Image (tube, rainbow, N blue to C red; front, side, top):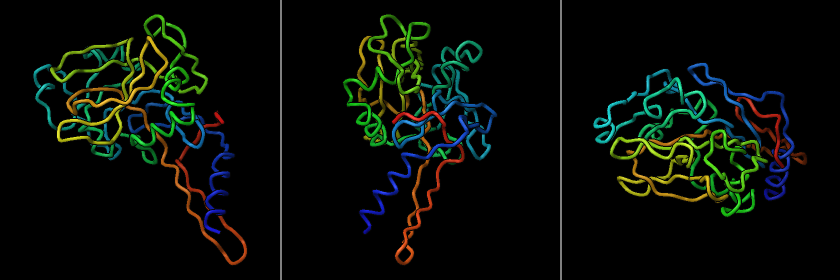
Length: 245
């Protein structure tokens, strides 16, 4: 019976359709969102400057200060919000991710297993990157191999801030944090490249600054009442009407 209930819950999740297509962070930034399978993702890189409780995230511009940072921080590529912020979002170190307060209420930075779920749904790591990447070479370096953006995820190559505080890879790589830690100094991320259609699983220094995509907290609460089955699904505050299934 429990197995039947769970299967029904999954089916219900697959057919949820609502009108909202955006979510707004505490700064007032509005993000497009998209359903891919049973997951609901932001379709833009995070660019928030405050945690969801209203506390400011430390903005660290100085190269040396960034290199020695072992606490939360964020920056803009080349310290230039005007040119890069609205398009590519901000770069966050893993310590900011680890606060669990970066994403809007009802959203979270994905676990590595949730990135794997996304890749598996799209046919595996060897093809997932192409299905997630924005098409063309306006933002991605040529040749932007395999990019179809058939998921409407619109992955962008926001580059990174390296452990020594320098900037690199804008246009060539989109790198996205997961919450999973590997060691005291390292955590897991996922990366997409301009010259293949893979999604790679990487291990980065926690001091590095890379992009963040938020994932909806999609939880199913299941109750059985006598001979009838009542399924109450509580999802993120706003869901996408664009469904990829």
